[in-house]
Amino acid sequence: MEYIDLHTHSSCSDGTLRPAEVVDWAATSGLKVMALTDHDTMAGVAAALARGREKGVEVVPGVELSVRHGATAVHLLGYWLQPDDSGLQQRLQRIQAARQERNQQILAKLNRLGIALRMADLRKISATGQIGRPHIARLLVARGVVRDVNQAFAIYLRRGGVAYAERRRFEAGEAIAAIHRAGGISVLAHPGQLDSSPAIISGLLIALKAQGLAGVEACYPSHSSRFTATLKRLARELDLVVTGGSDFHGEVRPGPPAGLTGAVFRVPYQLYEIMKEKRRMSLGKEFK
Ligand code: AMP
Ligand code: FE
Ligand code: FE
Ligand code: ZN
Image (cartoon, rainbow, N blue to C red; front, side, top):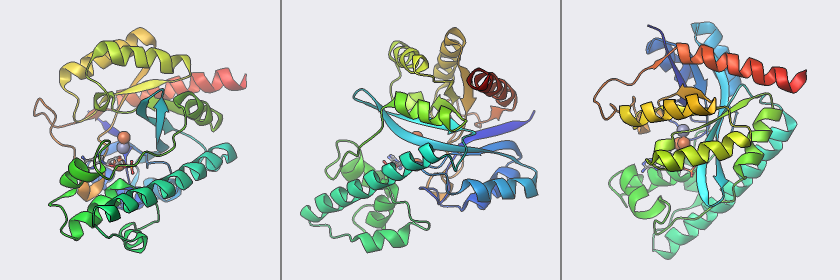
């Protein structure tokens, strides 16, 4: 059996390995295909593609966008986008600006709580520039304020945490359209992080599908086999493709955690072929 991983992060966002090293990890793990899906940036894609050619791993250019659907914050995965598409680039730049603003707000809240962290210290923690809550978490650990990254989120950084700040987000439909215009297809990431109720997820998928969503990440380490089966059924009913990935972040989230069943997390290659077919069809519709 051959396997794939369509959800990975490098140090261009909040992973700990450089893009080429993520590809090395994929090669060592025996993966045939991997997608690099950094948060809000495609800066690592070129290096990953180059290493993929060297190592014989098919690398899919991707991105993970944090967007909103009404009041709900959802993560969208985009695949096969042209990294240099100008509409996409503009959007990514606006997201980076929103991140900057939000990082300042989080630091200000921490300062008011008597925890003095400076932007300059944060920049040192982020190898390639993009800063997010995981970097703030690592700095809190390094300063001995918390025991580990999980505790940093639990107390300070999670939504509702004492130093949490919201950031401006694009509406999901807008992001789906932008991904499509850049030549890509979009997939709802890890629905299990949103809700475990099939009725709620089904409603969300129907709404997003009407806006152009192409697939759903049914295979994800924290999804139970029962929840994965539900998502696969919904995908069939709604004509969405099923994808899967580990959300690899390097050392901070080493190897996929064993799923609720205790089985090793693996995504079969066959899903990728179905996904490619979906993309071919969606491009055909666009350019005919
Ligand atoms: P941001 O993009 O700055 O909003 O940060 C979100 C990222 O933080 C997610 O993509 C995860 O990688 C990470 N994250 C969220 N919650 C936790 C947690 N409890 N423990 C560790 N990492 C987390
Ligand atoms: Fe992340
Ligand atoms: Fe995510
Ligand atoms: Zn992710």
